[in-house]
Length: 278
Ligand code: NDP
Image 1 (spheres, rainbow, N blue to C red):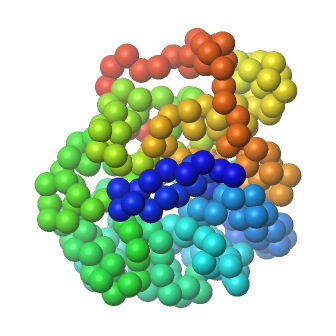
Image 2 (image 1 turned 120 degrees about the vertical axis):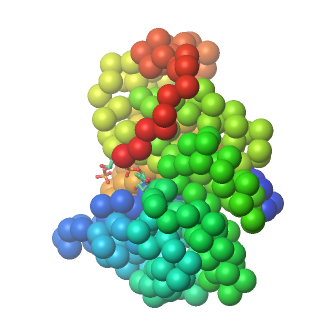
């Protein structure tokens, strides 16, 4: 059973979900990727994160196939590109995502990152999409504290349900002010690239903690992210074996010695830094 955390709206989401960036890009890998996502659902990683940007829509098409017949089990997230995020553009982008995903609703719709369109327009569109029943919740991605503050000032801005950001052992900046700010507002943070796209797995400190606990480096990196309250992680894997490994991280609690060693190798921030993005 994967632990769950509550959105401000009251609904619970699993702390481990599945990313999909780069899925659907290579035809020969498509079946394996669909199989991996389906296995993830069986293992309780029922939150799936995708975006209109990924593989220019092909990732959403793949996700649509993967969840076919199982839509009700899934908490489905997609994202609108900032260049589409005008009022009209957001509605149209959502319609296109729904078509590619072969569904009538998204559980969460995120603004992928902040662009030049005034936030107010995007939020108005999100509100309209909710009224139409096309989306159930909305949130943002790559928003720093100042952006979230600004969002809260605009009408309906406080309906935001999550901020999806780059947060992992190698990217601890959010611990200084973003995570505390979100915790104070009961706003869950979604950690993307939680294993730094695989880069963390060969780090000696990560390997050391993994060996001592008889777990894998990916499980160390994921369990480390999940030690935070109100944080969930969305690792991506197109391999069934690695999906199973990642799901196993939900049950792992790192001990004080593990955390001390990881702090030594990846020191926590001592001053505010701008939010990093990929
Ligand atoms: P991740 O940190 O999830 O790493 C994914 C990479 O690690 C893949 O190459 C995968 O390969 C490999 N991998 C996964 N599990 C394991 C494992 N157990 N052992 C070894 N290798 C492993 O990076 P992502 O950038 O994909 O981030 C996760 C998700 O977050 C994305 O897929 C996307 O949905 C979202 N995202 C959102 C962004 C935003 O701006 N909002 C930006 C970036 C990501 P393989 O598939 O072969 O297993």
